[in-house]
Image (tube, rainbow, N blue to C red; front, side):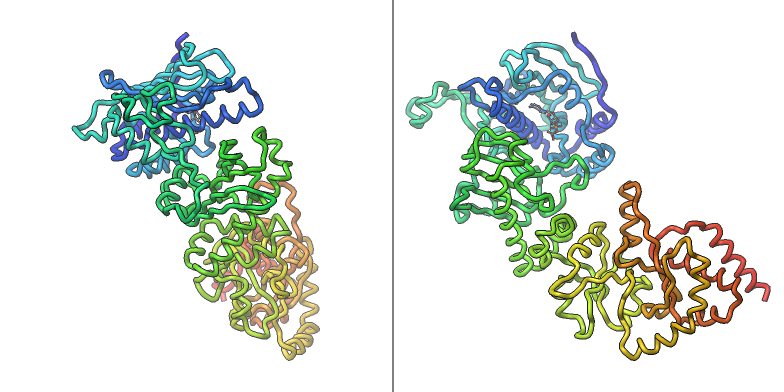
Length: 633
Ligand code: ADP
């Protein structure tokens, strides 16, 4: 029975964008539909590895283009997995992504750049750029019920249960809009237009893309292979080149680029290409790419990653996550193994020893490439780092065994200059007497640059690494030291910056300040672990530091933001600057005043470390009282 349903609101907006688009490259709809057809073949192929019924013996997966010039129709036909009724309404009626709002924003921004559309995972709807009606006749493999989906892109679609004559697979029929002008390149029923588009956008698709030719070849024109095939009226339009099997010296940059763009759904060139063949106990080909930019949904939960896996040239699956560690998830590409069994399933892969060995080899290859890169082309590496550094760093924090390999690939911002700096450069440049590699973690560079925690270090001319990535403090803590030099947070206790003479002078001060320290400690007991005098400050009267075994304020904020419950809160240490005139004055004050000032100093210190005040109104009231006092003097 025919049913009419409304599109999800966002799809309706998306369709409006497509229908009224002035895109100059409307032709990309074909790339998108062929790519969907190819994915559908992948899925059927993959299921058939463990369930023979999914693909009858002798049936080849393929994609077909069919035109009807008269009726102005273009059909894209595949014998892939197909869709059930439920899947059609879900896949072609709603957007599966979590961030639909953001998605629309991106599509809107990409309005004049249709080549961008593929990356957003809404390729199907690009059909409405060239068609005023689209029908999808589909049948899920392993079932006998077909569904006919139809829409004119006006906000609704219909579905009807009608068996598909070809059985499992999907036929997409585009009722093409009238052409704008005479431009034949926009005539999507013209044989040479379609041939050109397939060559340009879909040449590497791993299934044959066939088209019925108008003039079948004569016996003389046929190649030997063609003579042996039954049908001669079909021509295969794509080369299905297994680029990775060729030797790198035979491959042009342009070919790598096109290949990358087709598998990564990206429109830019890759920043780095890694192509190699492993020989010996383990045999495989790998063709890997590092994109030049993060995909738009890189940080969203449903963003897919992983490599494509082939076994002896046979495609097995895409997005195989087991071939690389998570901290290299930005790498795209494929692996073609000679050792794995063709009957692998996703579950098996996780525990497969061969897969583990391939993963090890790939990881070390990628890391060696990065090492070489940072040494030989620093500026390009920095471009990479700005995009994917935060991901790579996770390796240090999550996998202790990678520390050694990753530590020389890390780059930081620092107080010394705007440039990125490596740990090695840092220790090369530091003054001889400087004992540690200092760092400060926080929200953003501007805030950190102005932080009182840096006062003394700046005076001494010490450089401090500024860590603004959420993962940074886990990285520095996991590293702990680099080439025997400790990494030390400048917001942590025991920051030893004094000379021997200064230390002696300090001993004297300690005694003088003892009673004041006791008063403050007694008054702020519920907030503080300890109160001490410090030599880390010059212009600021007091600051809070965390104990060396506790969690820093910044870490606590990050965990709280991530929605972690029961974030352990460790009490901090208030350090006061005995040389600050305000603290000197405090020594002479009455007990009551000392307590009030202590509260104010504590609140200021909370602001410096980026923490919220527990009672902001109380803080404001105390300040106002002081202002009134000053005014009435
Ligand atoms: P994407 O392909 O990026 O997920 P699309 O909007 O192009 O986004 O397609 C939405 C979904 O519809 C696909 O994920 C797939 O599940 C389904 N689909 C589209 N075309 C086909 C096809 N030819 N065969 C089977 N399923 C398809």
